[in-house]
Image (cartoon, rainbow, N blue to C red):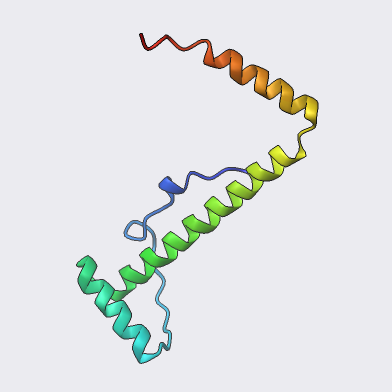
Length: 98
């Protein structure tokens, strides 16, 4: 699984736009309009784009976290011990703070 730098995902302002029509409840529209004003955004579309981008980033971070957890959970006791030893060695390579 390739890792993705979620901080460098394309921004909606530079990406090509596609026009879509959605039906939303009055409460949803009021919420989006309040967010637009709060964020001083140009449009509700830009607010929606940002919300979607944040959700994508959250999902990607969850995927990466699950991948890392799966890797470490798959290590044998010997591999864990070897990683620990390498970590202890690496810690001795930093200059002292004295």
